[in-house]
Image (cartoon, rainbow, N blue to C red; front, side):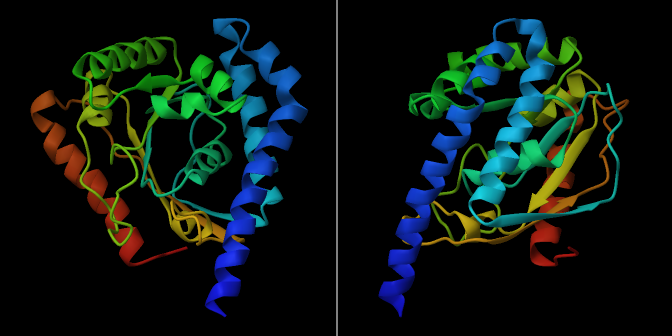
Length: 246
């Protein structure tokens, strides 16, 4: 039985990458056109949402969203969520219509086709390089000044210990949100680790539950408050992971 489960998981993982390739090839002309001009990013975002939905449903998953808040059109937010899977990218696109820019690790830029588009549309960062982190911070500030939102997975990557429920958070998202006085928009992804973990012989189709939490305001906060803001945000996500309400 265990061998069958491992074989199925391996096939499922191959199918996942095949679906990504199909979705990217089908939408490639629209993706390429949408990234020709910097100001066309909102168009790219709409195409990316279609790309994400194609992949999510194509691998046999179905999102279940429970909202405590509706995001306002034209308003900037700092989107944050727990990070356990490559599918977090697709689910984040799926969960909101407010155009945001990902701050993500530069290694994903090496993936054929996807990597080229990822490099043109996301803010890449080498988390082990101080200069790269500073530059990513500046680029994120510029995007916020343009009226877009930003998405950061504050754990700084997927924890190596797969048994860990939620890693400690980095400061970047909270520093940015305070400096630009934009609210934190936390989300909890319940099932992505089960659907598509960073383990070759695990994973499978099923539900993808998302809890979209109330906004955490930053109006009036200073950088001295960033640790408290970071803790409060982490507590919201951790409590939902331990006691699901969706």
